[in-house]
Length: 335
Image (cartoon, rainbow, N blue to C red; front, side, top):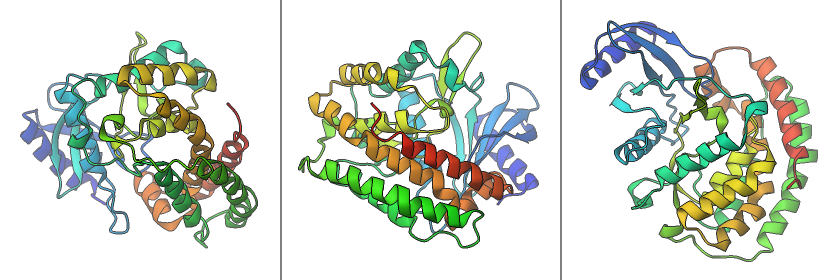
C-alpha cells in the first residue's frame, strides 16, 4: 500500500502527464470498497480524483485497466456523464480523473427520471457503431446461460470454506448451508431446464459498466446524474447488466421500474425477445450471486481488499453484511 508521500509523488507525476497544476493536498473519500479514492487539490484549477487500485497476486482482475479502457472508450464517443480519464501509471497502480459533481442518491429518492438517465447512459455507451470487441470481457462476463450458471456456482463454492478468523463466522456458515445453497439448487434447476445452449453473438453483447447502479452514481443540484467506478467494466450480456442493476443491495432500485428499464435497453440497443427472456430467467440467480458478494467479507482475500480501502471495523462490517445477505435471499421469487 502506498503511503501518503508516495501517493503525492504519484499524483505529481500524473498531474504533469495530464498537463495539470501541481498537487497541493490529498483527502481520502468514503465509499470505495476495493480501492482508495482521494480528492486531489491542486495549486490552481479544480480538484481532481486520484485512485489507488488494490493489487493482489491472488486476484487476476486488473481494475485499473478495466476502468481506464471503459472510460477511454465512452469518452471518445462523446459520453460526458462519466469522469474524464486524464493519466494513469501502471507501476504505482494509480490513475487521475476529473471529479464528478454531486452527492449520492438515497433509495427513497429514485424516480422515473433517474431510471431514464441510467438507461440513457447505457444507450450512449452503446451508440452506433457499437464495438463490444474493442473492450475485453467484463469481470465475470457471461455469453451463455451456462456461463451465468457457472458464475454463480463459483460464487457459492467459494463460500464453502470461510475465513476461520472472520467475526460471526458460525452464523455465516449456517446461512450458507441452510439458506443460500438450497436456494441456489432450486434456482439453478429452473435455469438449466430452459435447455438453451446458445452463445450470445457479438451484436447482442453490450458495452457494460458492470457493477452498475445508483451506488456508483452522483446527482447534482439540478437532478443530473453522473456515473463513476468502472473497475469491472467490459463487454457482456446486457441481461446481466439489468439483473445486477436491480439486485445490487447498496442503493436498491425499486422493481416497479424494471419493465421500463428493460424496454429502454431493448429499444435503444436493438435487442430481441431473447434478451427479455434472459432478464426474467436470471433475476433470482443474480439475487443469489449478490448474496454471495455480500458475504465476501468472510473470505480472506476479499476481506484484505476491504481493509486496503478502509482499514479496521471488520466485526461491524461482517454483522451488517450477514443481515444484508438474509434480506437479499428473501427477495427470491419477487417480480
